[in-house]
Length: 151
Image 1: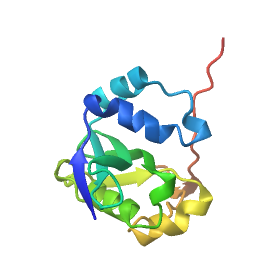
Image 2: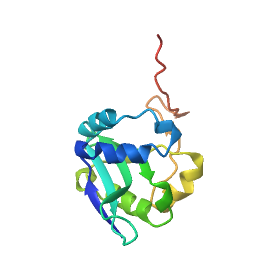
Image 3: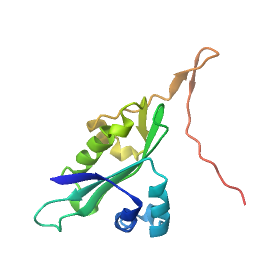
Image 4: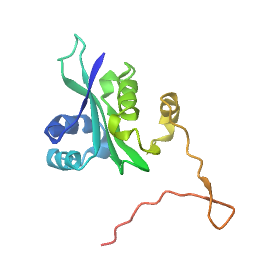
């Protein structure tokens, strides 16, 4: 079906073209994506190898930032719109989960839209239970926060 390979900064132009399919990534430039790829520990792509497409077309990609021990966070998972439903997403996620550089990591996680939860469950991810035991006793609900820059 596809050929899985590691992405490098040389793949920035093709990856940027994939990102252009989504409005929320429209601000990404080739140079920005090149910089991101150069600082990404694990970046995986799937190339199409079917007769109806030029061999080597990048149809799916994901980036992983990790400390190689405790945490690995998957970002920017994408499958080109005209190839969804053909198994490229499953192939991509299998490559991410099975990547040799991530085998010693305890926690592999990602953020996704609610509508994609069933898909990610189908490839082995589980909803994260936000209630955690705390050292002081009892449980607390974890929340995700992002930094709000002030000018």
